[in-house]
Length: 604
Image (cartoon, rainbow, N blue to C red; front, side, top):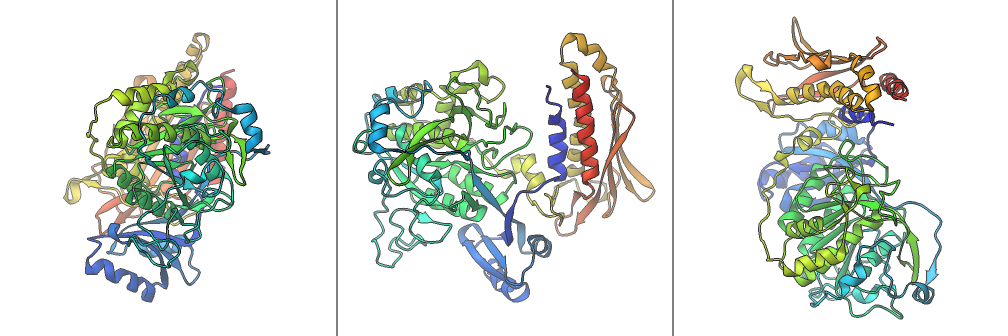
């Protein structure tokens, strides 16, 4: 079966056919200007008096805040009211994220039972050479690994001695001794309940923590492992059901970096882009940390249908797929030849579980901490190495696997021994590539997710206009036309790459795409037909005005046409255009699905 759906993923995610869940009546707002400016300081009071909003969280040094409606306004209404405010740089929903492990029946073992059948063997049957890597450990610098998750069983026999302690805080005196904004945060923080007790009530975070420690030393040694090589910082933002808000994840990231974490493990994710979360990860990059993220468990190609935070292109992010015991890609694992960096074991991984128990779980949640563990081993040996260099070493020392070719960027599965051995002899390199959000066209296109006011992700809230005056060409429009014209090209190319005996038949298909933008009597047109001969004509010099119509028409091989309409919107303050696709209704999507099935059937 060929992946003709790739082309449709592009357009379906562009028009926002389906949105991710978010916290009702809450938004994240980035203000313009300096955080210390009068403009910024007066905004909260204005929101309280004029818009009946309550500030629930503030990252004041970044001029970022979250607001909750006190009058029952929906998230869409809040965004509509705030997006044109002159003090607002951007506004977005507070998206909900979820743990990335599979729900399954759990066989639980006690510490003594586990010791009896896995002592000295490690966490998995995969040949990641974790046990051999332990012999290469010569330092004891205790790098801090932040586990941003459901919390950790702070008293677990295999973990309790490795829990990070904030030495600048005096326990239980009711004071913020170190002035970091958190009272009595001796062992991390619970951002979900806003208290200093990040105890795990789900089991996911404890399991992840066990894998990370188990990559550095024998987790199953009885009665408990040797003196810890790493320190584990529990940062709870997911609740007892494995769900948490983006705003709490952001808080956890900032806390981790500011309190000395060098490795950030993120075995969670979702499907909507957040500019605020993106900026938080950039902050972790400037802090020289390594940010490990689970690629997701939906069997999706992340190149086409992104999941976050794994799909952020910040240079310190490592996106991790899951493999089976035979080094094949796990059936549930997301993948991506240009967006998922490498793979690690993710099926039936035995690790710690609350109540001094151990159990086996599967998911990319379990694969990510294998990378966090080896990253921590490297930083234990080379504590001044930055996250970007650590990422480069881990990616450059994988074991190449034919089953992973075309599935992950490196084509390989992690090798702990190779990575650590290479790092020990490597020269410290302080180089980090320059990075800014503006370099990513995807981020510009998706930065304000509910700007269209509908239930789906709005296509564009603010796109930059190239040139000045009335003759400028809107870059956003050119990008949209380019994406739309790529659909038939991708389709035909895929068909032509089929088996030779079918190739000629597919070349006989004609797919015609017609994009028109009408402005009164004038029209911007892009047309593509008979793919093999080309014939593209685009005129984007016509000035677009608010309310102009954008129409995408696709003619199928059976002569039918499908159509998706939107309109051009104009934002006076930023002098920029955007396109809101508002008619991507279920009928159109059903017709696209029927067309896909027909093409797939004709290929057999």
